[in-house]
Image 1 (cartoon, rainbow, N blue to C red):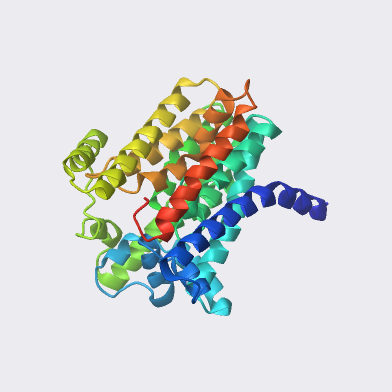
Image 2: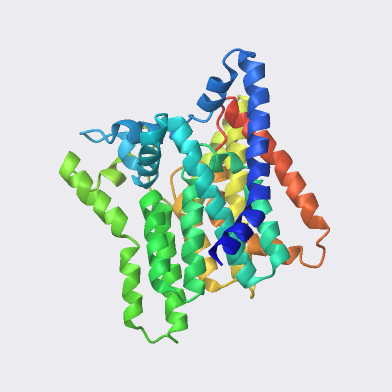
Length: 369
């Protein structure tokens, strides 16, 4: 029975997973060949993954956190610990990170499939997997970023919550919190699901949600011992490397918009145009989830809080990447295309083209999100 289940898992997950990885490899090889020629093509291909925030994750995986307050403290330890564990036998942190994100994306696709299948039908669930694997910013599911493991944990948490398994849901949500602060958005979603299941009469099973923020609390305690600052995670966010300060979403939008329209360099304008476009797309998806009567309220709660956590900053940054965390919104796309299913392959193909462009941007070392 287990063998049959695993066979079904791979038959469903493998095609979109291989399509996404194949597209990444093909585009990256072309960029590397254009930039460096045929000499040492493979080392340059692997090294192209280690850019931007990925460098920090790899630093922590190799050397740990610094003794004093540093920008590295703004990164939670869940993902670096995964890389460290795999790097022990592999002996190459970049290759280890690729293996981690490969396995994590497989689980992410599987849980997104099961989540959509439980809410809609098999065709919609398969469509959702392909949309995720070939999303415009799917390169972050391959590079050493938290997107793949976070989506795997968050999708598992929502799936188990909807299936009435609060302990499994809380454990998955706790893992998401160990990977990224956005995992806290799962806490109210899980509470809402449990209360609805208990007919708004709280029971002892609701206590499980206390596990969700535990990894963040443990990290704060660790930072208190290591640096003397239990809030080092939040203090690091305000360092010049990040410059993050909480503010209203419209203030962050305004600052990003003003930077875009006053920029003289075309590349800079395109960067901030993407930030604004994906940030507003995330808002539109959240609004659509609330308007729809077919979307579980817990999904809308999670997506809205996840979007607010990234948009309520003094400056919109990495919105093209963070929108991947709004994966429950794929149900909106499934519903819109339910009566015109011939459109779905076209949408996947268009998304794959944008994904290829995103891979090329990232492989060339430019800012994508």
